Image 1 (spheres, rainbow, N blue to C red):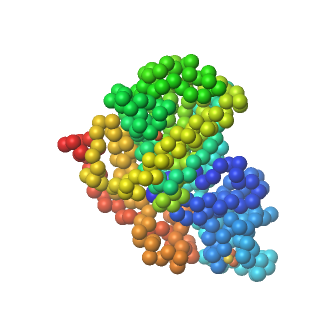
Image 2 (cartoon, protein in one colour):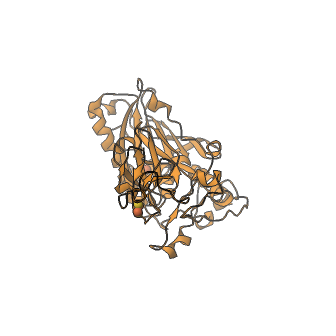
Image 3 (spheres, helix red, strand yellow):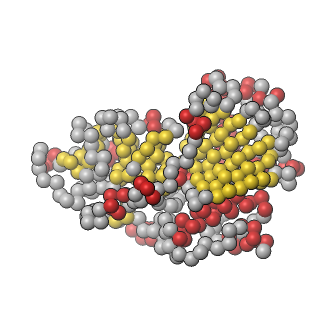
Length: 389
Ligand code: FES
Ligand SMILES: [Fe+2]
């Protein structure tokens, strides 16, 4: 699991007037809204005696109050009021918790899980079609996996599995026809284009099947982004019908992933078709989960040498390369093994920007240990060159 990225913590409409707990990267956070309706995210551990702020309430000072002794924390994580000291009473200097940058986009609350300044953060992935309601209609759904996030992301951009795992996306006997036509990579993302030969489209109350012939050449554009561990799958059903599945894969902990899914379509934009869309999307996720939850080992291997890859796997190779740079050169990977001996005895927190900005501040909690960067160049670019070379 990586720090210093935006992740989706919750759906916007789930956070109303009460604080809500969100778990990400193995830690607990509290989400709440101030009187202007702006969403905020703090560590969910009160530094007085460890109360969970998410069990508290919001106050007139635009703070969240701890349910144990009522200490009030402002959106910057600073204690503003200690009821036992009375109005105007002293607040100890260390009475603060980490506060995380928060944005709302695409019906989701995004939180920045790290200490980088704004200028150094990778952006939240673009999704212009979501804003364009005249041409695209969104549906929202979600899926929970008993699998680690990197396995889930890799599954989302893997084209070779479609013929085997998803009967609605391809035929086994045509597995050799699926191919990647284009692939590009940036420091934090990758885009690709590929061709599949699926059966007619299901749904649309039986109408969709008339719009794409059986085994018609179909163009699909999978992309990935480190922010949100987002996978974007643009499926061009035919020359005028498209759908885009935009799923943000939040690592809840080392073993659990929650996918926040927004799908938009530019055809049959009436509400009567939404239910079927949600149902078919979840069916595809379940088909994937049956396979992904049974993969060995549980974690994506850090070394390519322990697996064998072929040409069709090269876009997954791009994802691994991007990730590897952030593990080995930037040192953003949480060292969960280093925390295990302290289970139940000591709490760690994700570092927030205030720590880097004000090194003189003192804090009650230690930050999560990170796997040190090795600074070694992260090896050959191409998955295939390693396994077949
Ligand atoms: S534990 Fe939070 S106010 Fe005491
Ligand atoms: Fe799949």
